[in-house]
Length: 192
Image (cartoon, rainbow, N blue to C red):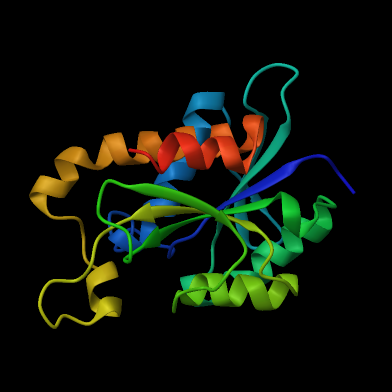
């Protein structure tokens, strides 16, 4: 098995979804790609991929944005894990999380999917739930709004002003997880 990390930004393809809450995972991947100077290329596994390192001599990263819809993310993720010979315990899913307040980031290994169809499809395709998750808080829908409707809406004007900081923090959390492990990343980001 490779010592590389597969970091997957979950979201939906197309410009109509680009600025929605559901695509915050892909926004974080774009930030990581920009930090490393990486350029996306289309991979046969139906994903946009950047092969890079956080720093010279650092661990190898495969940053990936599936080009499928959220609920069919598993195929591209599984295909990339096989192609790059990366075990599930070196896969990191970066995704929106309605059960966490907007502007908070939480990390975990394994566990349930909390109704998140992208995670459910990833777990099924990888054959395990034991992969890392960087959960980017987008807050709960207001009133009785359906969760699916809420996550497909753009961030509010107030949230949009804070969004760059949230994306930056989530990218930092991915870097901390890769460099220092889950416990240190949780201690740093869960205390905020």
